[in-house]
Image (cartoon, one colour):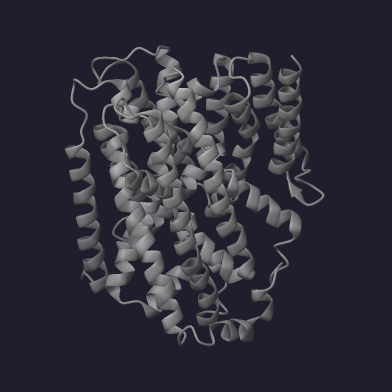
Length: 484
């Protein structure tokens, strides 16, 4: 098979990226003298604000954010921008409040390598949380795996099938995350976050250039369809209930997603004072807010500008591929492919590692540190990652339509655990009765609505209804504590 220029560039850039990734892993490998605390939260070496900003951002900027949001804007107009931009910026405030509370709990002596040990004294609640998020996030993991594998397969021009490419991506993730632990993941996140940040800005600016510049941009979009610049948009998608549901889901990511919870523990190290940890958190949140402010607009420009360039494509999901294939030089196409795969890998390894971290500490059931990282909880964690990754890989072999539906469903469904987390953080982590009630009651509401086919009430998604029900219980539980 003759190698095209695109394939050559993809092989070169992809090879450089993988080489850098494994150099990071080997450079930060966990020696035998390291403890579980070092493997899971870098206890002896503090993580700086820049790396914290990039690892939080890379965890959030999944492949869907890079490809899905522009495609969404292409089909549904400007309404995608307020909920992404405002939701992410308000989410930074949520992240700050939650992060401060995590720091206070850590410095109060409730030391743990797993965030759920800080949140819930009750083991049933902890295991319930772990089972809920593991099951709910499997389709979302599968969506990321499918996206990464499909891109690698396309970039290889058929040399690798999507199934084989997905397997290779997962193997790479498992190897470098188990070699280096959380510190290697954080540094690779910094690489991935920087790459995806830069390429999004470049693509947004390039799309504006390709349609003739910023002058007259809105007029060109309006000429295609005036409703693109209005809410609820050309397909009447962004009704108030739908818009609010998306907005709440994005805003509460710092609470609902387990990969965020585990990263709060990175604010704390054996050499960091409480004041330093809170200062680190403030700088990280400022960096996150700045990053979202800068990157959200180019993503919107890519989607709306793509509608001008390709007003008649059958499915918006192919928008980025169409833009890069027709307009971008081979080099930029290859860089974007590697960047999107990097974004997917960052999300995948973050979720897998956070689940392994929580699972390992529950199974080994001790706060004691093991002197050998290859034994005990570390080995359990590594094997757990492999098992969950294998199950998610099996999900990714389903039809793409089913994966897209289940992945979107899973992302919003994690809202059901928010009331219990807020209770453990801000009210009483030791109250087992209320912890269990707040963990399982919203889940039951969600499952009952979904199983009955009653997906919405007054236009609001079942996950929002379940969240509101849980928050009402949260207010009642807090009121009882105040009264006592």
